[in-house]
View 1 (cartoon, rainbow, N blue to C red):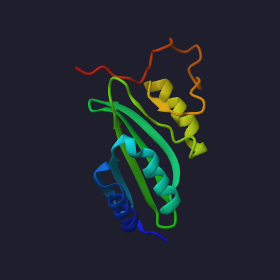
View 2: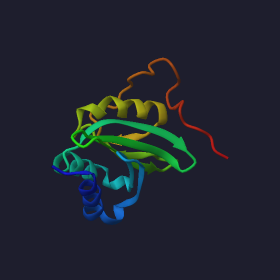
View 3: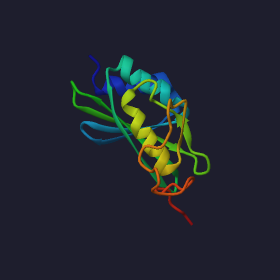
View 4: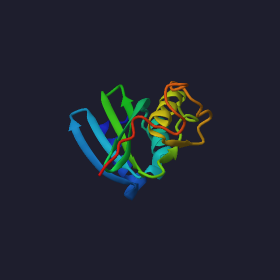
Length: 146
């Protein structure tokens, strides 16, 4: 059974420079920022080797870009691990986790509709919530930054 230190050390050892920052939020919550290109491999490591489960993902649009936090849990030790990526303002895209975790399907569809983030290899990016609510190509959660 892997503990928190082993999981965090494993991420750093296995993915090296693709892990750009690790921040301890409290005793049981960490935010690990990674290069977006590593999302599939990091997620597979967390699930298959570290025994974590995917909980949900959340997104926001900031001056840095489109930020996604993928929330994972290691229930037996109480760890909540947020895998953080920052995507480009102009063409936000990242590999979909839906082919690895069914639970990511709907939240990726929602983030696609609200932010215009393209989830590469998503099995079905059709509309989930917006049908008739706003125009095609309008992403209501995008912000304008000066």
